[in-house]
Length: 491
Ligand SMILES: Cc1cc2nc3c(=O)[nH]c(=O)nc-3n(C[C@H](O)[C@H](O)[C@H](O)COP(=O)(O)OP(=O)(O)OC[C@H]3O[C@@H](n4cnc5c(N)ncnc54)[C@H](O)[C@@H]3O)c2cc1C
Image (cartoon, rainbow, N blue to C red):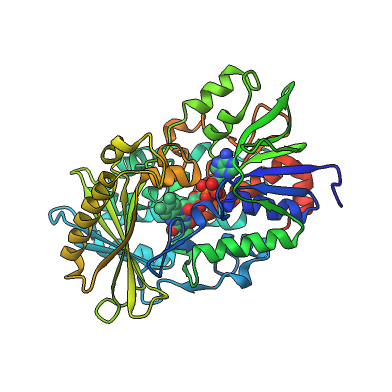
């Protein structure tokens, strides 16, 4: 069925905007995606520096195996065959966690593919904690079933996860889990930017299950993945306008009318989807468009931390690609994570070179002096501050991996870079904080108080590629209604 009269505008071309666009264009809507940057893709889009392809928001993907959730999504979107991926964990390791707390922690723990292998590794590392391990793995298996069967998406009523919103840290306390085991179990919640003490069990278990089910690296790049999604969207009749920042959303008597661009151009639409942070959408709404209670709820949302990243070129003969990721984990005496460094060694398109990527928390205070400046317009002092932190992180990496031969710094980005690139408040990496304390405030974020206005993107259901695409389907379900959604969307 064609929706000739239904003009639909999506603000933002990240994975949230593009996947929503593909689904809705495929259903026959007249869809336009509007993107402020010159190129589409948002956090998905990698960039090239000094001949090296540097990733931003896709280091690895979970659940692309047969019958698994991301594969179902990619199949529906019609992009699986054109996004080549390599399986991780074939040598037994997806992620290697390194600890330096010999009294309480093993020196290293390997996250493998598969639930049995994970349970075995936990039992080997923590032989005295069999009962706790059985409990946690049983819950992760259950979450895995819910994730791959898409129960939440197809529920006709609001799917209640209230029994799984308890902070995961509390559950581990009740199970009498040791600090060492707690740290190992704390890492998956850090993938979505939440501390284990405040991470709802549901999010923890889903995040972990998605990677344990199967893990993959893009064979090409995030930029390639973004281009594939754009091509698919256009092939379905979608229109993409880039270098076009949306400045306001028109609302009359609580009904949406369209969007206005910075250039002054007006795009009328009966449906608008803000696939950007809800606080960004709020700033676009005219005074009085929503009730003060809604405005306050969105304004007060707490966001996840940002990230500082370094990309460095190293000699490929001495440092070939490493097929797993490495995390250096620092913890307090209770096993809560106090600092985390992520390392990835990947072959790159430039000959004889491996790209070392290091990610850590944003170190926000370091960038305070440049808070009011924009990317590309910062002084030399900013570059020096970046280099100083980047050099310290490289030195720390050398303590773990040995001297890094022929190292050349390629690029480093800060929370301010992320903020300016995608408009994420304070450069928040994973958007709205999915914490137990914010359970109610973050519920049903894809609904707004304006008729015809919806939200999508990583903020509405969960961050990450899977969580963000899940959010797109759940927004489409709101637009269609649950019955139509069931009839029209078969995943
Ligand atoms: C460093 C980092 C590493 C990550 N690693 C992984 C990983 O390995 N695996 C994984 O699954 N996930 C990972 N993630 C998370 C994942 O990248 C994100 O959850 C996802 O890409 C978010 O997509 P989105 O569409 O919601 O938002 P975005 O990608 O932020 O897209 C929003 C888009 O809206 C545009 N926009 C904003 N305001 C306007 C406006 N006014 N007008 C027009 N356009 C506008 C922006 O320019 C942007 O293109 C990572 C994230 C980060 C930051």
